[in-house]
Every structure is written in C-alpha cells, then in structure tokens.
Length: 232
Image 1 (cartoon, rainbow, N blue to C red):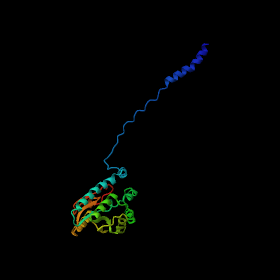
Image 2: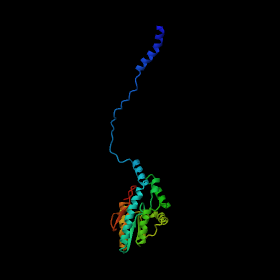
Image 3: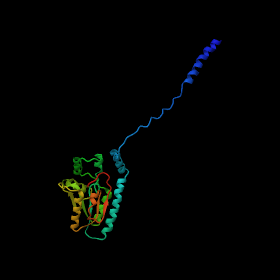
Image 4: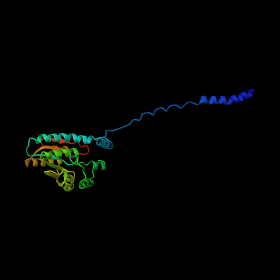
C-alpha cells in the first residue's frame, strides 16, 4: 500500500518541484543610450516640398493671392476716380498665369528645356482672383502693361496663353531680351521708367517677386505670395 502511495505521489511532487523552478519571464532592461553626433544642417528638402504641397492643398496659397488681389482692386477703383492717364503694371508668371501644375510635375525642380516647352504649349491657367484685378483696371479705363522675365523667344506661347486666358487687352507686353545680361529688377525698373516717360501714371505695380516691385516708378506695389522660387 505504501509503495502504491509513493508511486502516485512521485509525479505530483515532481510537477510541484518543476513548477517552483520555472520563473516568469523578466522584462528586458532598456538598452544603454547611444551618443549621437550631429552637425548643423539646413531644413530637409523632402520635408520642405511636403510643406509646400500642404500649403497649396489647404488653400492657403490661393487665399493669400486673393487677399492681395482684393486690396489691389480696391486701390485701383479708388485711384481711378481721380482721373488721368493711368496704368497698372503686372508680372505674368505666378501673377496672372499659374505654372503650379508644371512645377508639381517637375517636383519643384527646373529643367530649362521642359520649361520652354511648357511656355510654348500655352497651358498656364489664369489666376482667377488676379483676373478680377485685370478686369477692374479695364473697366475703369486703366491701361495694362505686362513686364515679364520671360525671354523674347517666349513671345508666341505667352501671347497665345494670355489670349486663351482672356487677359489680352493690354497696352504693352515687354519681354526681357534674350541677350539681357543684367538682373530682372534692372530690366523692369527701366521699363516702368519708360512707361512713365510716355505720360502714364503707374498707380499699381503687382508681382510675386521683390524684383518685380523694387526700383520705383509706381504709386503702390502689391506683393503676391510665391514660396516656390526666387527671381533676381
């Protein structure tokens, strides 16, 4: 009888013994901190491009243009009541015509041959809030002058694009000569000086670049947003 009890008890005791020997898993201690060496660097280009896309997709870019356009329109209406031989000066790219579709296709890069083809294709849509500025000027008999950094060889595509966008009732369209070696600002300042010498009072000068606006010969300047590129 005793032997049978011992025989039965042995597996049970063994199980209890083994259970006592098995320990629950212990948490892994955290790895020691690794020292990281860094140097100063500019903002990451990929992240900046994502930020640009978000700025556009949220509608902030269009809203910024519309805000400036509203102020320009109000000024033209107010100033036109005083009469005179009046004019406004408009840049073209990112001022009355948008190249945003092309820029996004290029991932905000610039390939000269592809840019030239885009201009020749004349597919840039009008910036609608700026069209109202154009129309306000014409309604009040204020002359339109376009001053653009586009080259003289860009004239056919540019003229067609302006016609297709219903922005072609202008007194003058001036391109930067192909062989012009100076900065865009110098070219545009000289052209505004010439317009003034022809008897016009430039009541508003509107563009997306500081080089469109600096240099004088306008009663007021209006800077449109452009976070995509800089023209000097």
